[in-house]
Amino acid sequence: QVQLQESGPGLVKPSGTLSLSCTVSGGSVSTTTYYWVWIRQPPGRGLEWIGSIYDSESTYYNPSLKSRVTISRDTPGNQVSVKLSSVTAADTAVYFCARGYGSYLDKWGRGTLVTVSS
Amino acid sequence: SYELTQPPSVSVSPGQTATLSCSGDNLGNKYAAWYQKKPGQSPVLIIHQDTKRPSGIPERFSGSNSGNTATLTISGTQAMDEADYYCQAWDNSNIFFGGGTKLTVL
Image 1 (cartoon, one colour):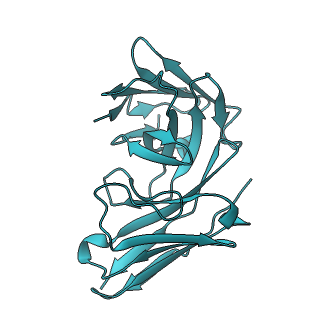
Image 2: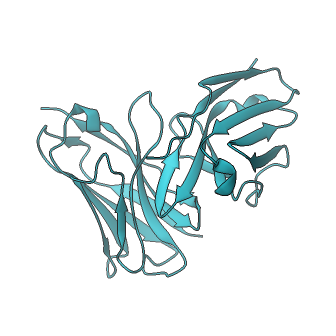
């Protein structure tokens, strides 16, 4: 059974770069069947798609974040990572990684809270 | 950008049917998925490809999608169904979420 686990600093300073990893167990991030997605949920608000990475290394980003976000894959480490630059308090959120299959997301990590504060 | 609109809240009495809507331009031409999210937990996929239930999801959850509206129906709603529900669509490798509906069972 595949499991996803997010990890990274829980506190990031304003104007800094948020960096998170998603470690996948019970499956391979190199699979051609699935793709990998980052989503976030600010406190008291809804889910927001950040971006996705496919087996071809193709990446797709939310236009509202595209200038600041990079998603990459570490095949040996079986991880998917997200970097978000120039963060502000508005980037404070619980960040989730998820596995995509076709049009939907069938597995989610437990999420990790990132707070942007000095 | 593609927008999905959900009512912020829906209330239902235990044992009754809850109907949650999700509206988007020609949404019926895309696949809709639904997720249940409880506080402090990760979202759980409850409906995909408009009408399909993943293994382990109770039969009281059902979905439909036509025209501009996808609908999640919960028959015989239970107290444990109180949660936030999000619809989601996929288009050209972009993912869109509705704003979510808080379902209150009272």
